[in-house]
Amino acid sequence: MEKGEPIVAKQELNHRAKKVLLIFREFLCILFWVYTILKLFVFDLDVWLVEKFIPVAHGLLYLKFLFIVGAGLIFWLIAGDKNFIMSTIYLAFYPFIICFWRIPKLFFHNWPGAVLFLVALGDFVKSFKIKLFIYFFAFLSAVLIILNINSFISVISILILMAFLAYRYITEFKMAFSSASFFKQANKLYGDWIANRDNILLKDYLRLKIEAPHSPEYQTKSFSTLQVLLFTNYFMRFLGNKFKNFRKSKTIVFYFLSRLFVTLIITIWVFGCVYYALFNIIPESFTAALPFTLWQFYYSSFSILLGGSVGQFAPAHPIAQLIVVLEVFSRFVILTIPLSVWLGMYKDKHDSEIDLIIENLLKEASVLEDLIQREYQISLPEALAMVEKKEPAFTKVVVFFAEKSKDTTYEQN
Image (tube, rainbow, N blue to C red):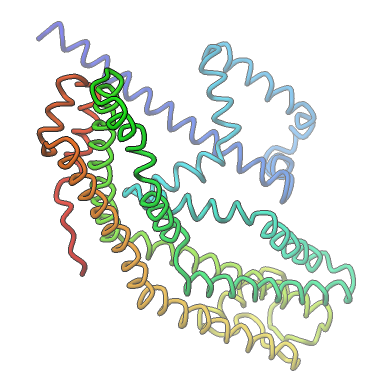
């Protein structure tokens, strides 16, 4: 025991050190990408920090590239080739790791939710070119409004932003009133599977059963077909059980709420830019006790949309008043209609679609079980025992799904 205690203590110390290093790595990655984004798209953060806190070190800014390279070389010497390469790759792809792994893993503990997220992401990628075009011109319009080049460009930018906002609302309504693409795709895949099941699983087996029922080739094919049927049966039950748990979760609600939140942010951003553009075109459009700034208009847009007052300014021109009325109307469009639809009636709609997926999966599992009993004249436990004698490693995989697929009897609420 005395000899084992130092070993355990050392392992615990190594575990803690590794955890600290991982936290430090995450901190450095976040710091690097925040700095990079601010540097490229917002302002020179490093110049501002030096001039604000260490003005005497301003000349060192011209040598920052050398400092970065030197720090990298020191890390390379300390960490070694493998750790340096892996850390560099991790740092370079950190935004993708966050978006495509960490966030789904954080929110979707039930893996069908992660699949739903990825399929939704896949749908976005399919239409990425069009959406990129639309969002780019919306962003460009906002930039032109902020630059305030002339009144004509500002008016065109206002029209583009309002059209973009209408596009966003239409997209959200289509999403609320249509089936989730994942559920449609799942049921389509089930239909394709039913249409091609015999060709996929039984074609060669049935051919050899007729042409050469006593040949070694038939014996080998018969056993491999039994393995596939057994695995597919338990895998279908496993999927049915997972989707049953998924239906009980709040993933769908979270998905719609996240889209609602993004729509709220976009609405605040669009109307804030429109107010600012209108003020630059017609300065008497608004009256305020405080000096007008872009952030004041964003704050007022936030306040109006969420039911507060008009914020730090009051619309004085009829066009300004009309735009404020449009934002108030947007509040009811966003918060009343889609919210009641998504969290009420259409949640039940998605539940019924998940019910159909579960029913199809369990029905197919029963069909495969009947197929095993008809072709091999044995039950599922007997088939599992037969396979275990010849392929114990494969049986472990099947047993895993068999254990996870227990209690798959499903009753609709």
